[in-house]
Amino acid sequence: MAVKHGIERRCIAGEIGADKLLKRGGIAILRGSLAPEGCVIKLAGHEKKIHHGPARVFDREEDAMQAVTHGQIQPGDVVIIRYEGPRGGPGMREMLGVTGAIVGAGLSDSVALVTDGRFSGATHGFMIAHVAPEAYNGGPIAVVREGDPITVDANAGVLNIDIAPEELKRRLAGWRQPAPRYKTGVFAKYCALVSSASEGAITRV
Image 1 (cartoon, helix red, strand yellow):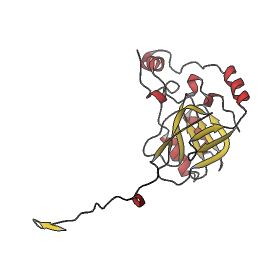
Image 2: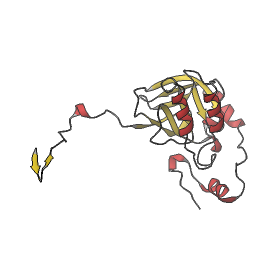
Image 3: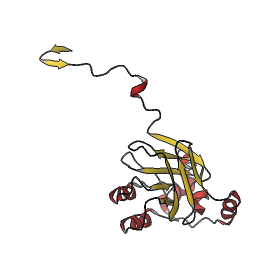
Image 4: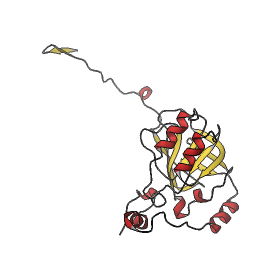
C-alpha cells in the first residue's frame, strides 16, 4: 500500500492460480446431428451443462414468444426457433425478447432454447444459438418436428436430434425451401449474398 497526494493506492491484483480460473470459458461450440456446422452455447451465468427434452417448434420468434407468455411451454421442453438465421430472418435477429420471457416465466433453469438466430451478452438461461446450417439453407433444424427428442450436452460438445439417421435423411430429402420474406430491396439482396453463420455471416458478391 502507498499513499500519494492523499490517495491510498492498493494492489488488488494477486497471483493467478489454477484455483482462480474456470475450467472452460463462457461459451462453447457444439456440433451434432442438429448442427453439423456447429452452434454456440452460452455457459456463463449458470451451472447447467446437459438437457434432454421434447422439441417445441416455432418458425419465427413471435410465435415462440406467444407460446411462452401464454403458458404453453413446460419444464423440460426444448424451444426451437428457426428461420431466424442470416438468410431466413433475414439478418439473424437477436432472440433476447423470448429468452427474457422464458426467464420471467421461471423456466430458465428447466427449458432449453435452440435457434439459428442469435443472442447477446444480456441473454440468460440455457440457450443455444447460431445453429448452422440454418433452416433456410436446409439444415437439420428445418425438419425438426414437434415432440422430437433433443439432446444438448455441453460436456460432450454435442447438439443432437435423437431420431434414426435414416429418418433424418428422409425428412431432409423432402424439405423444400420456403419463399423469402423479402423479394425486393436491401433485405432481399442481403439474403441472396450472406453466408452461413459458421462462416461469420459475411456477404459475398
